[in-house]
Image 1: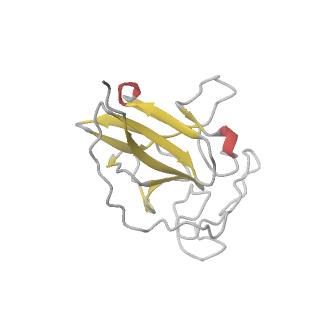
Image 2: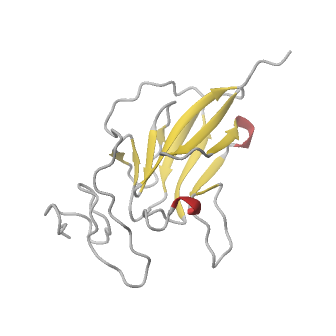
Length: 171
């Protein structure tokens, strides 16, 4: 389907243009996603943080321009679900983004997951309609990408900054 804003072709089921982020179709059966237009962060900036993640670290996820933080110690991380609360099934993801207008920003209930494997964290898109992006690059559903300290994850139009924090040495 061609985007009405930029004219580029997208997947037939896409609701948001992969290229410009504009709304492609207005589905009356679901809450519509608001187009953010330009944002004040640089997604295509190269990230060179460490990919090494061990038992002496915390994973911290911060929503862009928000003070709250989601903090997980290494022992808590096996498969973290990112998304929003489902009022029908009453299932809440590990990182519930409802507070941050997740529905309007195109975040799915089961949008993506972070998996700890082989001494690193991996990001996986769970076939979300609005896509998962790592530093501006769209992920292919069910194909994992290694997360690095300082990476930006975009779920629809909601951006999370990834930080690895070392735990203080115990006496």
